[in-house]
Length: 266
Picture 1: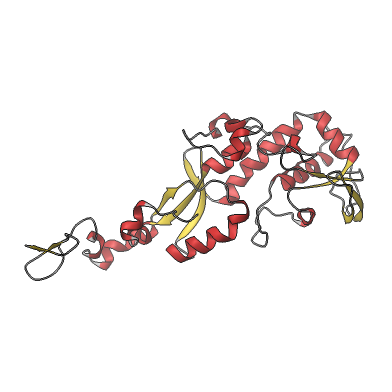
Picture 2 (picture 1 turned 90 degrees about the vertical axis):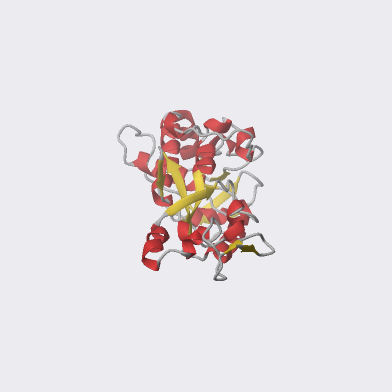
């Protein structure tokens, strides 16, 4: 037996011997085919923010657009975004229904809520391929308040005209012509963001996750959400710490030595 410069074993006929660097290449195509249908988590990427587009570019280039995905580990099971986001919304539902004074403020004083940009008020879907960064907390708040309009247990939350009107942003006093959210009858925009924003009381780091089985932690990992609100007990901690990048195992194997650092560059 001889060795190359990389110390890979070579058989007498000049072919590389099967080892951990090439074993899948030595199998018959029909033997290896099932692994293209197997998805494995390769890391917890955390908060994307404005890096949302950059993440996609890096991962598309490394794995191919159809070979990676973002999933969430919820109660021991890997689930897609559409299922995990329902837990996020449920946390806001539980929080708001347990805080009637906050609901009274929102519905009587505010006309709409937003996260990073006033254009957020036009988004009703959690799926946001068009945005520079994702925003979910404002959508959850709008959806929960709209539910209360139809709940007889909340007679003080009444239906409202959702046509555009003049709303004053409590963050800077600017007046904008924007749609009023259903159930909101006030004249102000309420930004839900960092501690200095008017709506920090609804920041996802402040809102506790509603189900103790969704509480997550990762020793020695500290995200921005761990130093605000209720830290690892928040819905934001659940959202970020349950998020995983999953890759088709066949494509993962093709990374070769880079399998040790599959999320490098994020």
